[in-house]
Structure formats: structure tokens, C-alpha cells
Amino acid sequence: MEIGIIVMGVFVGFLVGLTGVGGAALLTPILMLIGINPLVAVGTDLFYNSITKLFGTIQHWRQKTINGWLVLYLSFGSIPGAVIAIVLLRCFDFNSHNLELIIKHSIGYVLIFVATAMMFQLFLSNHFKTESVETNPIEGKKGITILIGFLLGFVVGLTSIGSGSLFALALLYIYRIRASKVVGTDIAHAFALVTVAGLLHAGYGNVDFLLAANLLIGSIPGVIIGSTLSAKVPAKPLRIIMAMIILISGVKLIF
Image (cartoon, rainbow, N blue to C red; front, side, top):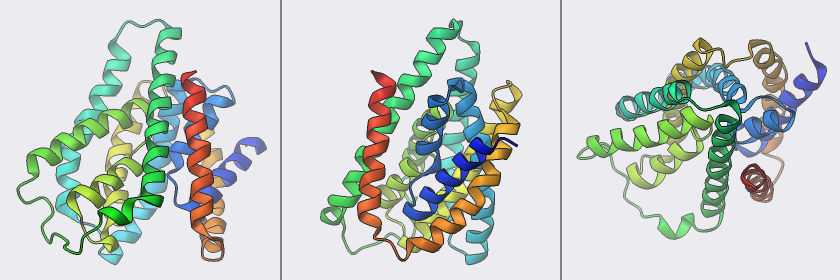
């Protein structure tokens, strides 16, 4: 076990538990910052996330806070999208430097988008809310649901980022499911998506299992501590700070 990696896991887990910000948006840039190959950083993060999302999915299944049909139709698009992204990375005859550059820039742009989306939710989302909530969110939207899943799944397969944050935006503003089911549906779908993507990356040798294990050892207690403190610490200022950190990380990866 490498103490530094475990401490990193504690740090990321703590911030996730404290702010609710997606772990991939924090972890993948940090892994690249410490010198991990971008492709291995993406694959390891997806594998790591599949394990963390498993426990969340089990809990939300017990609480009956998952919209199963929405998870299914999103998965019809997102899983093929992620698979295509990963296979393209494998098949295209890029030299090592170009491939790393493509992944770094892709992650950078997605981080900027995620940070912008976070700021939108914090400051402007109340202006777009209405009282009605659809009881059957995919009625008449099956085709667009699969398409949205495909596009966002492609992004996740390429960058490991967005399985939570990007799909959560869709659940809130396109399908408008009840708030009590947003988190559960988001986590259950993310579990299916990142598990398939993580296993495919593992099959191509892009997962550092020892690194993932050390991160898990640290992040599990980190999440518990952060979640415990979240009720006592004002969330909005922390989320603003996290959005700015993610934004800066994205800009640095591009430039």
C-alpha cells in the first residue's frame, strides 16, 4: 500500500462526501497531475467508480429510489457509446503522444463543462423550475433518451467524467423526475455504465488495480467522514470552490 495514494483517496472521498461533487471530476485530473498515463487514469477511475457506485446502487434499490425504466433506456445508449469510445481509442493508429493529448484535451473540455453546469445549478437553476413533475418521464422520449445516453456515454468512455454530473442534469431538466429519485436513478445508471467501461479498459490493460485498491482504502472512510460533516458545513460555498478548482483543472489540461 502506498500511503500517498491512500491519503489522496481520503481527500477525494472526503470532498465527495462533503460536497456531493462527482469523484471522477476530482480524481482523474489528480491522477494525471501526479504522472499517471491519461489512458490508465481514465481506466482506473472507471474501475474504481464501479465499485463505489455498487454500494450506492444497493442502498437506493432498498430505498426504492431508482426509476428502472429510465436507467434501462439510458443504458441502451450510454453503454454502446462508451464501448465505441474505448474501442476507437484502441483501434486508431495514434502515436503515444497524440493519444495522450487527445485524452487530456477531452478531459479538459468536459471539466470546464461540468464546472459551468455546477455554477448553473448553484445560481440559476431556481429560475427554470416548474411545479409539474412527470410520472412517466420516458413517455414519448425513448428515442431521445437513447441518443442522450449514447452521446454522454461516449464522453464517459473517453474521459471517465460525467457518469454522475452530466446525467444528473438530464434527469433534472429533461425528464424532471422527482428529486427523491434523481440521485438513486443517477447512481444506478452510472454503476451499469462505468462497470462495462471499466471492464473494457481493464481488458485492454488500462487499469492499475493496485492503484484502485489503495484509492478505495482511503476513499471509503473519507466519504463517511465527509458525509457526516456535510450537515454541519454550508454546502454552497464549498461547491463554488470545487467548481472553480474543476474549472482551473480543465483549463490547465487544455493549455
